[in-house]
Amino acid sequence: MDTRRALLVDAFTSEPLSGNAAGVVPDAEGLDGEQMQAMANELGASETAFLLPSDDADRKVRYFTPTQEVDLCGHATIASHGFLAEEGELGDEATLETNVGVLDIDIEDGTVWMTQDTADVERVDLDYQRVADALGADPATLEDIGADLPLATATTGLPFLVVPVNFLEGVSNLDPDMSAVAELTDELGVTGVYAFTFDALDADSTLHGRMFAPAAGVDEDPVTGTASGAVGAYLREVRAFDGELPEEMTFEQGHFIDRPGTVRVRARADPVSVGGRAVTALDGSVVVPEFEADDIIEA
Figure (cartoon, one colour):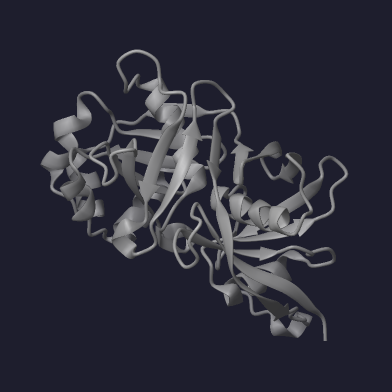
């Protein structure tokens, strides 16, 4: 029976059982997509990183949610490289082959930094009432700030709908209709919706965010690296700060689902980079499933 080492590593935190848990399979050589998908579903994390050999970088990664493969995942990248650093398998720099290209990874004083893809930000013409209904929000909490911070899609590898909210109370009171959120994200061709406010819990935080991606199998993600990078690019594009964008920003997320964590974001120029710490919460093994042709039922 083939088994592989499998871990749950909490990203964007230094405290176990907080932040965003990612599955990590450090030796995925020889596994096919169906096996990775089944193993990711079994591990149950929002994303699992499967590490593979690469001809173009130090290693290659494939990311799976419990229901599908995705091109890029920030927290699973931070988690997997935090684990590799713990194991003594990383120096200060590494390269990672992903479906969006080869990314640079840096380790600075225990923080894993990953570059992201070239940013693209586009304003969208959406009815505030529709967005508010999908998020279970008071439309006034969105329209109040919309004149200065418009609705937009943003990507640095994975696309998100960015929704500014006036105050923390508005973000905390969100009660999304997941089917409506999924319909909205499918229509826009984005992975999820990231709602944020500058009215953060911690005085040192730039903003507080929540991210919903039900169409990708993740109703609410605790702490989202790819979305944080996209929002950093959005803030740069819409000139959200008087003068120049801060050299580094801190985004807090996950507090309302008891998985608090922080993402450090550098977005003054492309490529945007996001950073965070990681800590291993579970270390074990998972059985590699064997599939026969007759076992697969097609719709």
